[in-house]
Length: 527
Ligand code: C2O
Ligand code: CU
Ligand code: CU
Image (cartoon, rainbow, N blue to C red; front, side, top):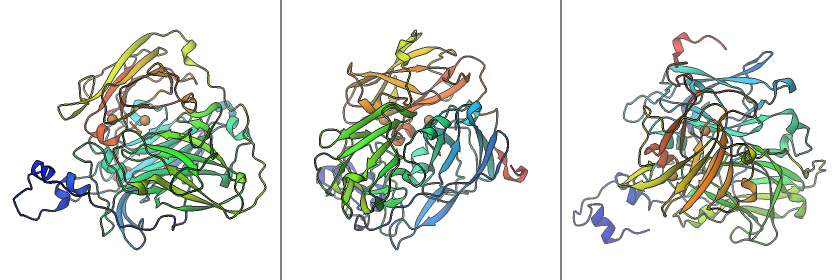
């Protein structure tokens, strides 16, 4: 993209004749392309599973150190990343959960901050949020419950619901930067019910973490949020690898797809071609953010695709037995309204190479896990939250984030309907509500997409849309959690520029900041 004279004037560049660093001006940095590596040349990888350091009767204990490292993302180049265990993305945690009577276990995850200082010499604080977990306020990764460098914190998680979750940084104002630098990873909770289903398991149950990034010629990550609007990379990463190829057997696989991008939303579909769509390719969705759907939802190209906004998770089955050995299938991104991006290299995610035949005893049951409709419960209250941009700011009901202010106060056990409204055009808002798992009632009065009719914690609110969301402020497992929890747009650039609010469940819940503060590493005892 060339800069027109008009844009140059806006940026104050015209006529000056001074050569300025392109990085000083986001509008210009946008024009920079990452080193153009060929796609589908690097083998697919899965982050390692983090073993617990110890387990007892009820609990598994994990430990992760956040630190800087150099990571080869683009071949032959070194990229500074900030990661859990120094990895990009962080290790996978696979945790047995569910009902205590059926072998469910809680976990304690110790996070040790060894990030030190940033390039300006400021300490790099961290906050870890386990997205999708109903955690107590003091373990939920509240945006100012900092773990400073040389401090640690033990986060306690109940794991009462089987689902594909993810952990990520949540520091006030800097989440987009920290997540972009690598501070994110997948956390899988499994329970007896799900393990008893004949779905693909083990090596055939595969995390697929999708991100986008932009690199300088020397490999450095370029953070460019386009004047606090959105960050779009021109390199697609799957589990940290640019456009990988994955060798698969001609059988069914379960993919746990997480959109861990800063701003980019995707429309996913399979195709037998790298560009364009072929007809009749199938993705079978079996789970949404909060776990299994009632029944599988089959999506067939070219008319049915899988929309996945920032922070959403969908588990899909791909049955490679419909493809002959030695064939190739591409996971494509056919774009998304509101992405404001026309880089075609980001329109393909990865390639599957069907290279061998293998027996397959997995089955996709017609019934998965019944999702009990909240709409049948008595409704306590309806609230409306408007997500909009005005005078250059991202606002919810006309206000920006203020940890001192609470904007809603549902009581324990209440069932509320929240109207999430995007009154404008030009951007979409993937809205995330902490603590609760909710259901979408409708979008502009119409049924949500079939694969959205399960438990959700992120809700895509498109241009001129109102999404009605119903939530119960008591977990189905009967855990009574009181206190303050955040709600925000999960386009992390919008979130950082204060499109965030909070609600408080009941009265007198634990304070998120003072109840379990981080401790200095010098006082750390073994877990
Ligand atoms: Cu995924 Cu408030 O975060
Ligand atoms: Cu969350
Ligand atoms: Cu937004």
